[in-house]
Length: 228
Image (cartoon, rainbow, N blue to C red; front, side, top):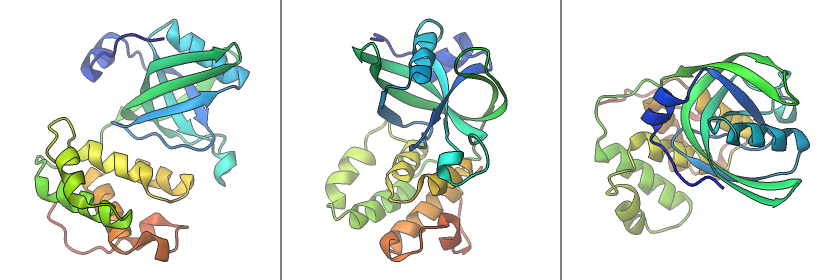
């Protein structure tokens, strides 16, 4: 069990070395500023978690390529994450909690242990200088209509809660929309946060279940957008 959570700034200044264990996920794309809880029973992954616990609690989470219609063993764009909770249900069955910190590119991965260790570099999304409520309100309203929940109750918790900014809200909803892992990976790899928000909004506003889901980026209507 991990008892304390450092701020992202503390982690990146105190612990981050650029060489990180790589957890290859079969079925989840982790976005920065989101959390994820999962079960781990693979001996290789359990060794990785134990290694992270005994060091800096940092891992890179990336999507398995071969399991998601790619020729790559794993995708080269992933998310640097902090291990914030470990529940050892048995010696060969862990439940772990992760929080995504930053998007990263994996340059090199070696198997010095039973798991892979990678050299990674942080990728900073392009962001507008503003964090206005209009964009967040549009995203919340689109998502609430999509899942048939009153947007008024969602607004109170998601828009007006000061710790939830546009990046966090965009990435949370990106991780929740019903598209394939491969399509979520495309959203993660977009270099512009505003573009990710716009594509997700258009998907939701056009009733995503009526759209072809084999290419999330194809639904983007390149209308003039005020990124501010």
